[in-house]
Amino acid sequence: MSETNDKPLSRYIRVLETVAHARTGVTLTDIARELELHPGTAHRLIRGLVALDLLHSPAGTKSYVAGARLQSLLHATMDRAGYAAFAKSVLDGLVAEFGETAHLARLSGDFAESVLMEQPSGSDRAFVQPGRQLPLHAAASGKAILAFQDEDFVARYLTRPREQFTERTKVGETAIRNEIDRIRADGMAVCDNELDSGVLSYGHPVRIGGGQVLYSVGITGLADRFRPIDRSRIKLRLSEAAADLGRRLGFTG
Image 1 (cartoon, helix red, strand yellow):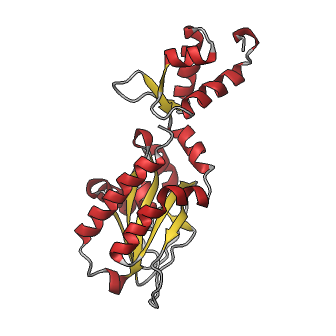
Image 2: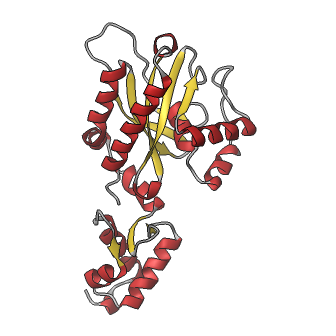
Image 3: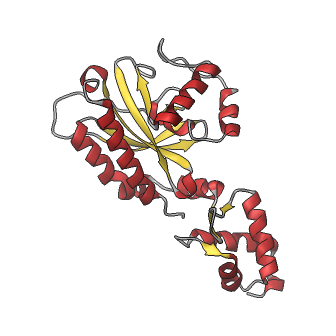
């Protein structure tokens, strides 16, 4: 395609397509050659896309990968079947070890959306089933995502009304910010009777390309049954699951 006949918006889209299809990132030279653009033109397009957070250049490299905004768009198109292909075996491993419900949640607006859930089979015990929409200030999976968003997102979220689900739900700004600090230091979020009475849940952030947290992996059960399990063991297994999921879901670079 001739550069002179290529409309500006089309050029931006073609750059994004080139980067999105490259698993390990592409250089400015790669983009210019692939799209038959003058290097100066390619640089101008890339600079505009970086400014919009659609592209990102990891420190110490000359390559470009999908930025936070583009990653959000790419992941938002995945359906349950897609998530099952990437994550079912990881969740099944958590279910097998702890005998409780495991699930994957994704940031969706002001909520964490449960996109895949696995439960023990062949048992007559009752199991907790997380809701489809999980509040960022109360659910462990939601907290694990909220804690690793940037300050603009956190500040914007804290301007909105927050529901108090039980007497233990933290709704005040100071309490939520203190909880965010604790989760960032510890690496794992806990919901102990804060969303549903009698339910204990743990959530761990899942970092994908560039370290962005769009997902969390969680495990939840009836508090009386789940509480005796050593918390450090749960944290270790969730950390391992999150690392595995990050590699699997980081297909955008």
